[in-house]
Picture (cartoon, rainbow, N blue to C red):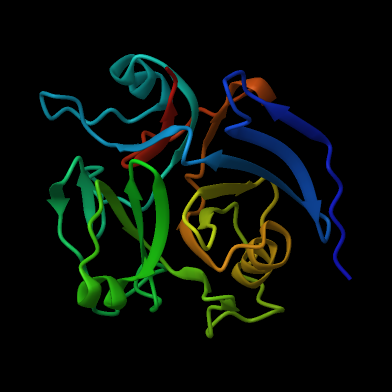
Length: 238
């Protein structure tokens, strides 16, 4: 039996309860989740400034965007911090979609694409994305998928000893809510995915990254430092 204990719940100021963060536990694993009302909030992807310099951190994104109320690292990147797989901002493709399998977590198919528009957030399995060619203002490919139409990724093993700090994102069926989760304790993929399926209750969820996972949630006192990041997702404040 799983158990969830809410420790802290915060709603950032605004016309609606549009960004909510809370600390939970799930089967003894500490998690932090942030729910974003995409209908009310300006949720965007970031990577470089107007001169092409990689932003690399939450402070730089806040300076670039003007104001930031939430942020998280958003997907994998190469040594030069360029994105792995599809990455697109304001309709401009920075790197191309990858549909072949390969090494590492990214290549553990099926992987997926996080697709943002002005009033919606959705996750598509990458090969479905290639076939459907949905319109996205911003798009970010990562992997593996955690939850696919309500089912766990078929290659996850319940008692796997491959554990790490992990972060990911799930989207509601109607695309109006995006939920970002980061673990504070090492967790395997199966347990992390079940948290999205059973607690967050989203039909689709996507793994973003592992040991580099970082969160900016000022009302929880979180402004994680450490690695220079590549792709970042954040909510721009009015």
